[in-house]
Length: 284
Image (cartoon, rainbow, N blue to C red):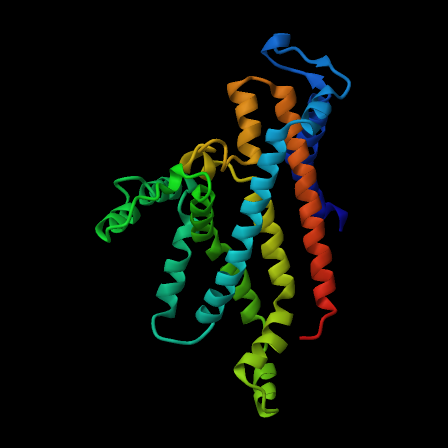
């Protein structure tokens, strides 16, 4: 049996464990243009700098805000879409195929499309606002609402992913349960909260964990739509690490940022798992 798991275990070691160990090693060294790209031990100076780095904590807050908002909306929309696609009606197969298109599109192409939609003054949203006689809101230039535009782009692209997971879960629920529930006088709404949602909890957990990990590491969407602006108001941890590595050539501190974000991600996923364990005990 162990030989069946060996290829997957070897793959995880090569693409995850070994890079993680290397990041840990780099994070306790100075590695930048100042050191002529030579690793010099700095005995935890990068971690002290990270702890005192206000920009890191600001980006942490923004990344968590983006992740929580996006994943929450995606779960709500995905449940509605999965329930709709699980019903029998004419044209369901075509709609199912079209539903997956946003997720299949490359993030770069999708982000460019949303950047044009929110563009000022040529984007369709600003054009409609202008036609209605309202003042321009400069969506991508407003630090208070620019992050909402990135959330909209992310929700539009990745909701189909969770919807497919939930649709697979819905199709695994026997129809006999619903028929017996209706014979007992239960309504459709009661069946949703007493049968469907409880039996979908494992699928919801899988979707939440996958999407939390992906949203927490968001990079290309932010880079293309806003570049982290305005005034770093949409900057994610992944983008901050990228800037330190590729713009400032400070690879030691960049590795420290990535490890710090990894610790936050592990804590977030553990929290989600604990919450779901408690939800399992609740009788709806």
